[in-house]
Length: 333
Image 1: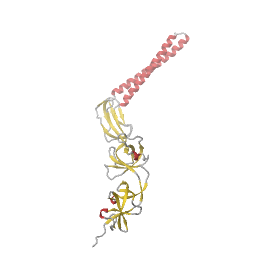
Image 2 (image 1 turned 90 degrees about the horizontal axis):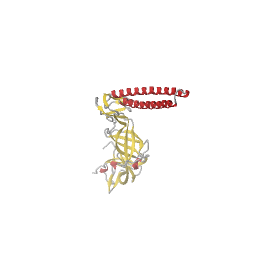
Image 3 (image 1 turned 120 degrees about the vertical axis):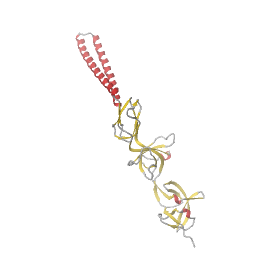
Image 4 (image 1 turned 180 degrees about the vertical axis):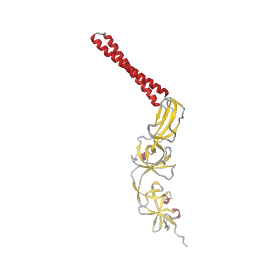
């Protein structure tokens, strides 16, 4: 009794658009991230935020002891007021002296003295104003505000801690928009256009795909990796992604082109080359093919088959050249 022909799955070859892409792995970054540091010395008297808090631009994050800066500012302002009064007095005295010199009531030397007094008073006022500006800056630096809206990623300062200038305070990140700096082979990156679409696959979110687009293509090859940086902005992620996650980015590197593709499961190797089985009148015929780009379970076929050919997509191990086959629906084993 003759055995029934082996059951196989089959697909009809047709030309379909293939979008050329280049893939690379990169870390997801915040739109902006800033490590805030103290600009003045002082003791922390108020900590108003913690890690994970959302803050608005200009919001007060913490305060330092402002006793010394406040007293310095008051003294500097008083010095400015005194200097202004002295300058006004010197200018009035100069005006009076000019009148008396003209009428012969005073010698010419007194006019020179009055003019010198005005110059000295003006210089003293300028110095007092500069000192007051520095004092006000010290007062402002004692209040730390958010330079932009975002999320407090890390807080490194505690209440009561004494800080010196340059001490780290906290890290603030703007996560309203996420991005990545992807390094691509220059041969592929040079064909990337601003606005080109990108697919984002975060390893922490298996099975999910996020979208993005290219916003910048580097002008200089990275000297360490010899690759060209491409910046990608990630579309609305609904809070499903975070800075620091690692993801695979697939970037469109050119215009779509029409190609023939067959499933990788339908390709096998014989005599050092790639082959497929083409079904003709229910019989499997082996065909040598030339494979191009491989992606997502399919391989581009450059030579060896034509559109309209019926190729075995699954079950090639059950078949030999010239054997009859039985085509079954894809949902059957």
